[in-house]
Image (cartoon, rainbow, N blue to C red; front, side, top):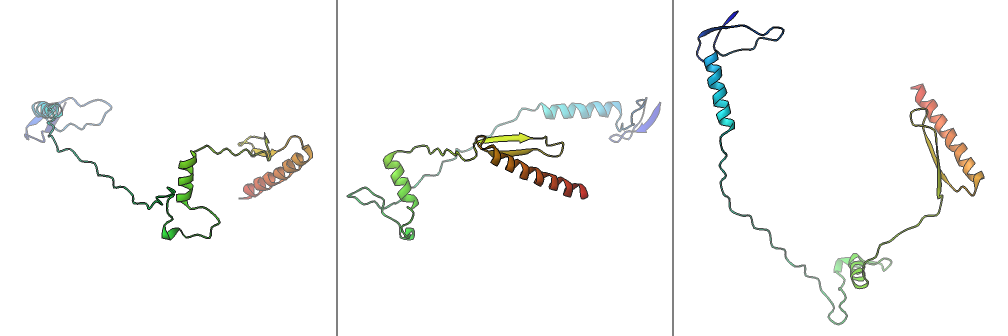
Length: 159
């Protein structure tokens, strides 16, 4: 049995402390029950929702873009003066809207095949891109890649 003073009411209370656990008790049984009831009442208290005024969304303003009435083309802006080598963004957008948008697919046939040799955990993996129809060039690429990998491993092992 252990005797302590209650932190709330300063009464002396006695109890059996837990075995193999730290003794952190501060309150007598009456104060502990009152504190527990107060905590549970605060947790179960209904939350009162206060109505708030609705937020209005900002009004979007139209962008004033000068248009040639005869052709319907967008007139170039003064800051869009270019050397004529590439079209302005407005010209690209107008052309795209007029002709309809399309997906651009680029097919790369250079080095269509790949070969991966080795593992990352055992000295490093090498992935080589090339053309299997030209094995001599592929072997040269592999030989060069192996030299670079071996040199990198040697340099890392020196540190």
